[in-house]
Length: 451
Image 1: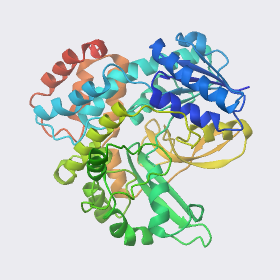
Image 2: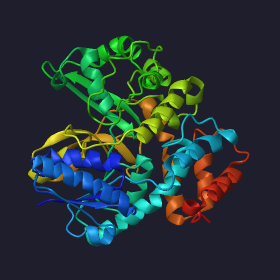
Image 3: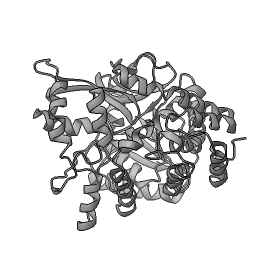
């Protein structure tokens, strides 16, 4: 019997999505699932939904709630983390907008730039606490993390706990799953691709036709304008949702049907994406709101309307929709679990793990997003050939990630200031100490540890 602990399972979106993935797995048909959350009523709500689904579908898995993580962990094979702290969107607003008032032109505020730093400073300490308990009570467990900022979390966790089995997971790579088949007019099984970089800052490095072995990247470049230039973005999705009152789930590995949207702005959501494609010759795996967080000139060319509309839609969608358990695979954690348990080897498209030479010019300790081989021996990263120009952009993040980790582990305000001053997105120096003090005061319950 496999034991899985879901940390943050009081979130219906996370809890029901993960439970649906587990419930459709034959390998995990007798899994013991423990829901852990500091909000017990929320965890009980998820448990009730899960037990009703189990009863209706006559499943053999068991689901229980344990709010004390130390008691939930013994015997765990897998731990899945998806947490946030405080009022997620109120803090996100602050991460994004307050630095702009200090003259920093960041395009978003979740993973890169100053917003990504303050997000990291809040969320990494509780994740380190979770990982410490796993090391104490279930040291052989494999931990999968869905919380952002993914690369800074993964980098810091591995620095604090060398040897920990901690893997960051993100579904942005699913963009290639959705877009390559229609673009290349090929079935998915005839396309083999690889991508690499940092989380939300990754590009496709290779694309081939399986049947012939022929390189397909030239066809991708040739067809990108006709495909992405006419594809609906979040501005169009938001407009359609406001007209119909219906929302489309766009997060995850499932197919997304946007055929009802016919009026589209040129390269909607992807103006920066197009600049990268035109000037570096590679395809980003995500759109402006994510990719642009790491680049100092992104503010000059990003689709700002698309970014704001994405944020508005995402916030509204989460507030309106009550997630339910389904049988369509939503994320990629369960296939990895199955590979580890059965030994049936396969290639996973994207995991976040310490570099260890997978992308040259980047240090081994930096968490990178690369494909991996999965089998009974574990998750082993695969080296990818990231072009020199993109490696240059990635290299700008080395000092940022190093100083973020050290600021948290040493609990030092001065290192937070330094992390901002080495960040390429920060193009001013005046007011940076005041910005840090402002954010510590405003987000005091989570940043008070910085001295």
